[in-house]
Structures are given as C-alpha cells and as structure tokens.
Figure 1 (cartoon, rainbow, N blue to C red):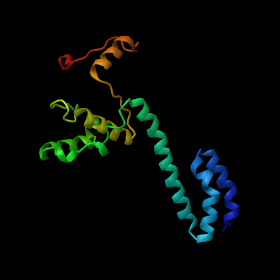
Figure 2: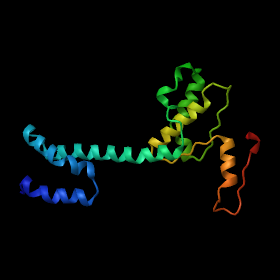
Figure 3: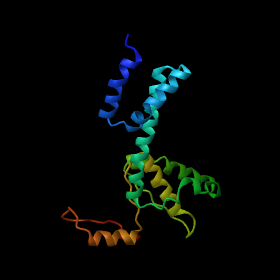
Figure 4: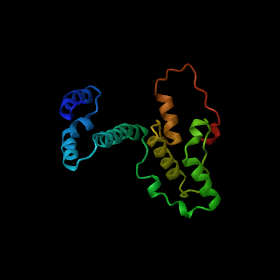
Length: 165
C-alpha cells in the first residue's frame, strides 16, 4: 500500500493537469487538517471535489447572468408569491420548474401593469441560468431594433404574431 506522501506529488500534478484550481490551491491545507483530525482521505478529497464543483458552477453561471441582460434584482427571493391567487401560484410554480424549455413550449404572461409579470419572467430566466441554460432578456421593442441592425447569418427571418408587438 502506498503511503499518503507517495501519492501527494502525482495527485498535485493531476490536479494541475485537470485544471482543478480550487482543489489544488487548498489541497495541502486540507490534507494537513485531515491528518490532525484523523479524517479519511477519501472524505477529504470528496469535500474538495464538492467545493471545486461549486466554484465551477459559479464560474459558469456568472457569465451566463451577464450575457442574459436580466435585471438581477428581479429574482425569486424578491418576488412575493403569496400575494397571488392559489391557481395562479400553481401556474407560476409550473413555469418555475422550467420544463417548458425542454418541451419547446412558449410561456406568455398576461396581467395588469405592475402585477409582476416582468419580475416573474426575469426570476424564471435566472432559474434557467442556474440550470446552466443560456437566456437573453430583451423588451420586445429593443429586440425588434436589434433584429433590424444586427447582421444575421440567416437568409430570411420570419416573425409570427407580430400583433403582440
């Protein structure tokens, strides 16, 4: 059986090669702590890998949030779901599960001005981003302007239901 000190150099090199910076940076500190606390090295490594995965997720999500152009203050934490009638709250929860994307279904939000439609849609967009999906937020008028001024790789663009605009 190999001693731990015999494994440290190849493991350190493997962590560098695999581009696992969080594990690599904290590895020696964590191993020393594990030795002092007599923790299992498997548990030690599992804990480090969980932290690496969390940092990876955060590094993946941050650019997706920036690219989405979503107002970040319109999220689920700031949306007061309890003010909605029960049947509407159930529909909101169905939208927040984000399965509509996998089913390639549209979501349309109707309601009076100030009722929270945009807030809810932004919160849904953020939930999608937390799942690693790419999202773009744009008011309809700005999206139409962007379509008109941006060179597209398509030969034709067909927009249905322009009556919504």
